[in-house]
Length: 260
Image (cartoon, rainbow, N blue to C red; front, side, top):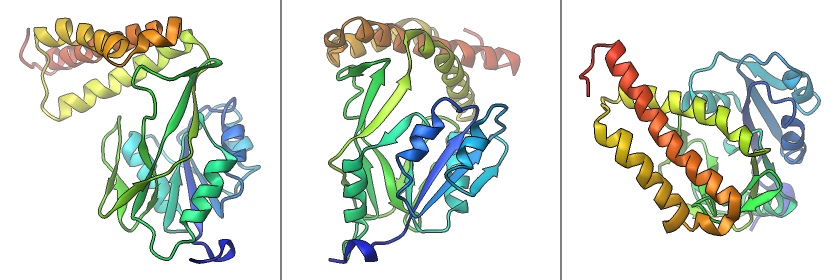
């Protein structure tokens, strides 16, 4: 095994827009990395000024969708090993130590998933299907890349992958009301992506899917055990299901698609 001093170099990539309230804590948590690359898509607040305190690699790029935007950040990195995190996430000291250890082994995997502990306000959400919510975040860019999806992007890996043990902290929403703008944005992006993929909205999608989403989150995934927050998440999940298909239907009608 290589020593920590000889570990492979790591680039952390972050995409941002108007994240002045959250980006500093995010970047502080990865200040130990060899490089930080921040790709901004047109912030009108202090996001870029704050990011510049932690890295000289702040790049402005027009918004392309989540997958293409994150891949653009990867392509700008100087090092092959990438850690991708969002502005509302924090790398714990334990996870940082684990990542450094993984980058020091003789034959690392092509990629590693990271579990996330997600918070709604001050409450950690332990159910609703929100934990461990593993996603690939640490990877060798020669063997992995982001999908072209404009929303719900994933890292596509060519090779073996393994799991990190320690959690990434995810402060997704400051309160219940904070969930609504994100739901609006994601429903619009999801509808556009489904439309481009040839998906079309049926009556079933507007009626049964939202109900199924609620019961799956609240009962099957035990959101009921998360209290009021679990109920709010379950209702919001159902609302997102309805909105994205309603928006898909609007796209169909606007583009002379088949009506319900």
